[in-house]
Image 1 (cartoon, rainbow, N blue to C red):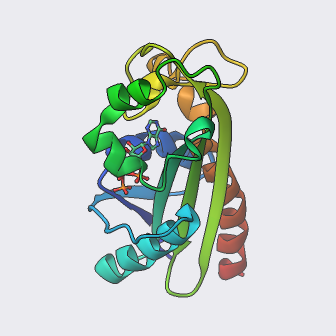
Image 2 (cartoon, helix red, strand yellow):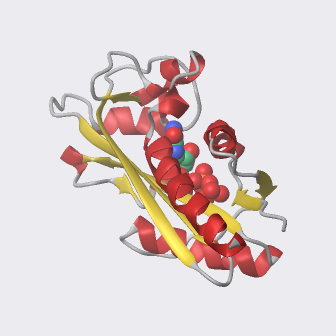
Length: 191
Ligand code: ITT
């Protein structure tokens, strides 16, 4: 039986971070580049679930998709479910401008990973607390240069550069949960 899962996303950076975790857990996964429409919802879980169904309808194979959001406390959770749009419009510089002179810079990065194979629908969440920097630190991708996870003095961007980000991120937490579930599910299907 072919157990390959297709990771459907327009953003290959996500796949690059998920892949080593999947390989370590003996899960075969391939990247399938496709931009997915994001429904309007306050909950990224709902957005991810819908993305998984759309991705399945598109390729008719077991799929995994992911929806993320950066929730900044002082901005009442903004950009949250709009993180993709806000990144493409005002970007990291815009976020830093919004937080100018604001002392409380707490933020949470959330990931929802959704699986769908026409038989079962599952989703897994991961969250990491942290804060928004005053000045960009390092590179990485997306919001990496402006987010410092709790317990660290360096940004996701700097952790990305030294190969550590994928082992601690919101995505890692959600992916680990997925792997634990999927390996049991796959064994049950085999027996
Ligand atoms: P999809 O095609 O998978 O939807 P996307 O890039 O639109 O890709 P999301 O809506 O899930 O993905 O992501 C919201 C935004 O958060 C987007 O701008 C990402 O670049 C950014 N983002 C998500 N995870 C990140 C991470 O680990 N580090 C930095 N930025 C991240």
